[in-house]
Length: 264
Image 1 (tube, rainbow, N blue to C red):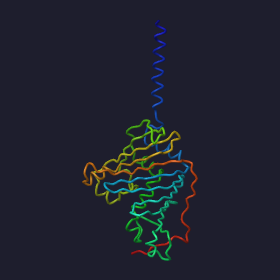
Image 2: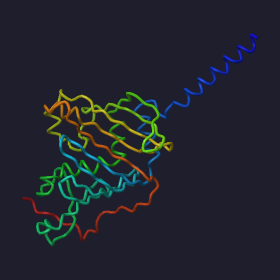
Image 3: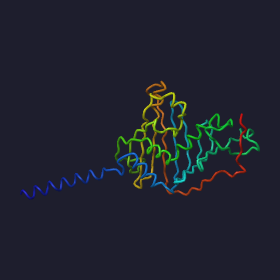
């Protein structure tokens, strides 16, 4: 009888330990998460969609990203400026396709221009910082680098996302530790103004069973709250990735199609 009871206890403990093991996730800290997912993505391409919410403002983007150690190449369309605009990120340079209604401002009517947050041309002066940040925020490698540089893991577990089994990680990102590598929608001037009022930004990362990102969510509500917005105001960047392994040939526009708007 005693041997039977002991065997039963061993079996029960074994089942409980097995259940605990099945709930375990791949990474125990933010750096391991960033390193593991970055390694899994290297050399692969995916399609993505991004929804940006900031108070009453809504914006949608979609495109493809090809991740590599030398830098992510990205092609996307966004309505961030009110009308659809095509962007490409290649070799850490952002190119924007100028709407036809505005090409008279580009010498030769060329369709593409380089966009820089510190550019002297009128296009960069007005929207360069926002466009540069938006394009780069869709780069999963950059988001994971922010996790590596400034993230602290606060929770993890398993979840189902759009019918796919996923590992779900919750993190806090220390805004001060990001330095100049700021999320889309945050300028260095704004961060300086809010210094001491905003400490950490919540971030969530979902990975599939190959450790590839399925979704990354950055919550900017603490920034709105520090700016005096109502507590109910929301601000989020939600990027969903799918079809990892898709073919993507993302190149910079041909040189003859790239113009330069004269400095104003």
